[in-house]
Length: 124
Image (tube, rainbow, N blue to C red; front, side, top):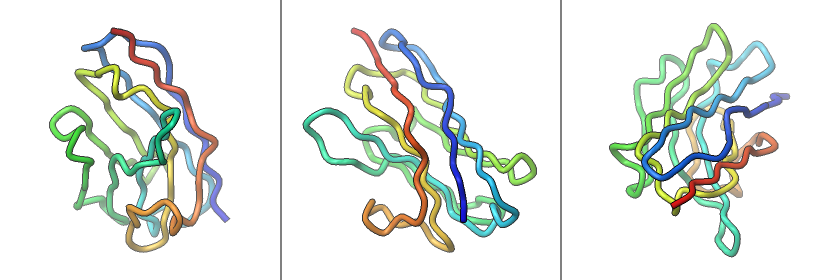
């Protein structure tokens, strides 16, 4: 069982930055690929970024956030981060941390564990 707790959301102006954190419980954090999804009103939950298990040598990003968002992990602190720069109003959503044993699925229906979500609001 893995429990995920996100933090770091908030209100920011367009062009600003935020860093989301996701703290995971359990002793096998390194065995899980980690990632972030987001859900905006009227839109389906969509994949944002992922990082592979272990040392996290492989990352993937939603095309819309490439070059602006960076995902990273700290296996000592059992935490995954999402650094978000140059934020746009279209980035406004609830952001969910996700854990997937082994490889990470970009389809939300196959994710093993979810956090409760944290709101990010970008004003224009």
